[in-house]
Length: 201
Image (tube, rainbow, N blue to C red):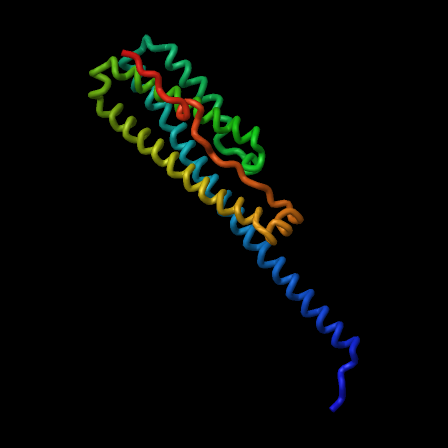
């Protein structure tokens, strides 16, 4: 029986190792791409829900104005917050790796949510408005949208957490660093939500 030359055995071992390394790299890279796309998909859903809220605001404001036309300061706050948020609804998912840009985005959306809460608090002074069917329908839609925003943000955070854990674990982190995969930022509670409400009697 003829023996294989040693150099050929070394070449075969080297080729098998190279194929195994390439296969490992390819599989890990593809799984990271898949997970990053999931994060982007959840980000798009957050933006969809913010857009839904933006679309409800003009109808809500116009309905409230019909009953409470002298509440101009509140209407201006809502209008200003909406116009600030208007330019920041559908922005690139590159913001997910930029903490400063992500924080600005979250602050603008939180300000819009706060101004809407002030608008709804004003309606407490107008019983006839609270009985208006159009207003009640809009209020229900807004409440549903706020719930959807909360759910979408939670799902985004869960997906981002899985992705961030993956790119930080060994040996995946080696491939993630070489390939430019970056950590994604999480949504956090607004500053108002983190401070206890002041109760006065």
